[in-house]
Image 1 (spheres, one colour):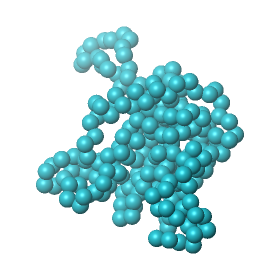
Image 2: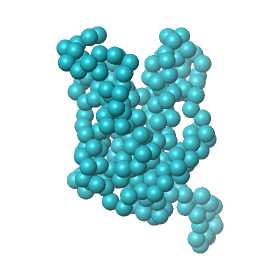
Image 3: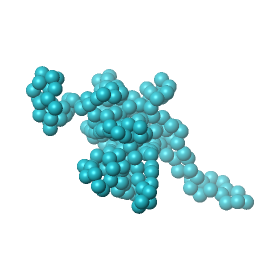
Image 4: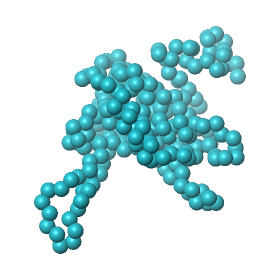
Length: 231
């Protein structure tokens, strides 16, 4: 539709043009949302924003964050205490010294459901009109686990957002024919290939800046602002 604000800005009259043909400078202000989890403590919020800002200062990191933000699906980033799993636990009656523990630095979670007819398990995500009641895709990062793994928290966020989140969004945003799968149903995600892709984009990230710049922090804060419902 041609609205008044489009007539005032001729580069927005073309509905197929994205961000006034300047995607390096602008993001889509009417996409859905990339937001922080609710009830974060000040230190937790600072930790996430600073590491997202460091990520934003790289070309690939910025692309991943902006892609998640302009999606019609909601993505929430927060802090969590993630699992530590002993790979070879002692058996009943056995005494064990040492061992190997699998430590998780970050995790991406989705709601799941099962098709009543096909019994196929699929993922769901909230955001578009009609799907607002569904939960968002959730990303949690564990500061302590990341430190114990010797992994940069910003690199962990790249693994989760550029890897797992963006892969799911690509599937969720496929054109909907109205016959093969309902909108919001995420099918076809191969866990093994998804993890391989996440590891690949993490390695491709390259060197990260040691500290976030004030400009990057400001840009990330803009990305993280909740959108109005009517947008």
